Image (tube, rainbow, N blue to C red; front, top):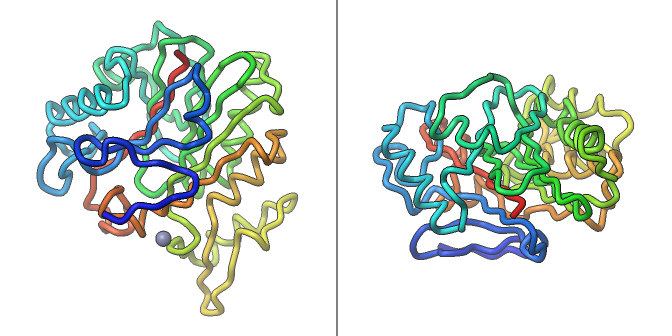
Length: 276
Ligand SMILES: [Zn+2]
């Protein structure tokens, strides 16, 4: 496997691999990880690290995969709280009372594309296979957040909604946030049609010349990561506090699940974020 990155590192490459941002690894009061498609026990099109319970995989295999990634990356399996993503922009605040939801307990609500908490010991879990993960860490209050930003969540400004809810509930000052974006399908591989591109061009307060690139045949290359980066800057997060992944899921489909690379026959990766 050929993995190089200026912003991320690959840990445990030979056993249960996971990715970490260099910048977030500097913060000693949190723990974070992004799983890969390797190191699990799932079979068939889910081989081998699939963290989705809702795609037809054996639930016992998915549970074992969570136990493996937790052991590898240092999370308490019992502390996991999962989202319930459907490409909307609802941000759910969770507490220690929610530990286990969506993993070892049933889901208790639908349409949750972002999770935030200000409690230690609650591990946030969100799902990906090309869509963009957004990590948020308040370096003063130590509140944390994760969001799932596909193209709908991105143009719906889910990143801004996370910042606003952390401010409203936890007193977060956006200038204290350290953020990380990705890994996701990147501008090299993310081609969309005109109606989708129009949604990005409609973000009039942003510099769309830097994230929508017409190909001249009615198709467009879109940079989801840059769009999210600009949305976070508009929301008050300092540009120098935002790390952007240079690891494209489609280009690295030997390591990472990509919906496009697999034509939908795939497992799912998870982002994990914990205030310790
Ligand atoms: Zn690519």
